[in-house]
Amino acid sequence: MAKRNMSPVKVDMPAQDPKVRAKNFEEVTHGYTAEMAKEEAARCLQCKHKPCVNGCPVNVQIPEFIQLITEDDFEGAYQKIIETNVLPAICGRVCPQESQCEALCVRGIKHEPVAIGRLERFVADYHRENVEPEPHNYEQNGHKVAIIGAGPAGLSCAGDLSKLGYDITIFESLSIGGGVLVYGIPEFRLPEEIVRNEIKQLELDGVKLEVNVVIGRTITIDELFDEHGFEAVFIASGAGLPVFLGIPGENSVGVYSANEYLTRSNLMKAFDDCYDTPIRKSKKVAVVGGGNVAMDAARTALRLGAEEVYIVYRRSFDEMPARLEEIHHAEEEGVIFKNLNNPSAIKADENGEVVAMTCIQMELGEPDDSGRRRPIAIEGSEYDIEVDTVIMSIGTNPNPLIKSTTEGLETTSWGGIVVDDNGATSREGIFAGGDAVTGAATVISAAGAGKVAAASIDEYIKSKNA
Ligand code: SF4
Ligand code: SF4
Image 1 (tube, rainbow, N blue to C red):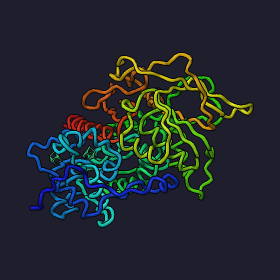
Image 2 (image 1 turned 90 degrees about the vertical axis):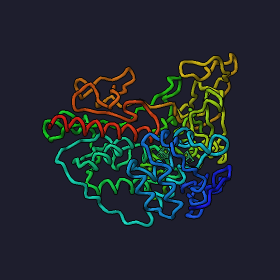
Image 3 (image 1 turned 120 degrees about the vertical axis):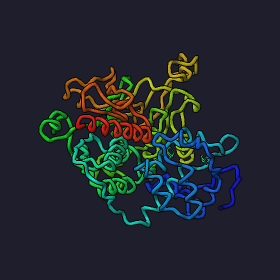
Image 4 (image 1 turned 180 degrees about the vertical axis):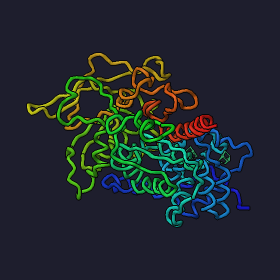
């Protein structure tokens, strides 16, 4: 048995120098070597009651896979993870581990928790680099299920249903699979190749991916049932409709939603000189919002050549929804944080182009419904920040197209599809999960919803055919 490592801190993960990486789109962190992974794996106490597993929305068998790393069986560790998680290279990179699996790690009570995410990433990368992907040849049951959206919820649902022998087709509105993983998360945090590779395994297992198909426009859900023989549909279309503040000047040239800005950079490759993608060559950029998407947009703006990039957020650092790691990375790279500030107007020149954003300073009052202290404007504290680009990153809602073309589908006031605990919607045979239900949330919670829906769809189709 490997000697236990009682170091109070995680084995450090190598990363590019902040000054260098702020000018390129290569991945920020390099991942563990085999030696580093074994050293970190030896910090795990192999707790019998496995509290860490309770923090993982897809129930990765954490101590088991970590034990296999200590035994040098990296491929065995990979196989253990994919019993419950079909997206390990992605989750190892973008899961908010600090509030999920690692939050419940016993080692984290007094010191730093075991670096579960980094170990998961190491194992997935080892598999990708060393093992030729092969089909699993699951036994087919002949039942067809349609999945709308090839993001984390859709892919995770497809993975579980294909293991059970279902004939799965994923309909994706964009030209490639991955959803928010490819259009929303920049290359420097999650390289597209990683996403493509995890989808490749699903395709080898027989999952069909139909791209450039907009459900509700190209084809409706009713047609999927009536004309194409699908017995169940899982809606995992995400939340792609940006929210704006509704302040004066928001229609000026140079105001983007974070969704549009990141899509132009990530999917349309604005960062690559070989592509002629229209995107503003900004010098001074303000990103409004405090979540991971805001950090991604700010760090992308730096890499696209901006000299000054501000994060403007109406609460303090303590309330910021972004992962601490992302905030640190942004700070290291030179993003300037203007917390406790809220935009009240955007100013444009005679050509309608952004020249400044007016902000008002805020202070924190009593907690509001979200449990966070309510920001209150300080009277007379307005001032202007000189900027040529403003990126709004204050949230997204589900696109109303599916709701408006599907009879009897109940939704909330903001467009979220209403489901029960099993992911079933108000229409028989239609299930939903991920951001289309919850509004923008984490990759792993969407993947978890995909698993719940897969189990419910299996039960539904079996009971219908019993
Ligand atoms: Fe942790 Fe995410 Fe892996 Fe689950 S999938 S063990 S939450 S990193
Ligand atoms: Fe290992 Fe932490 Fe899980 Fe215990 S709680 S088994 S130490 S990862």
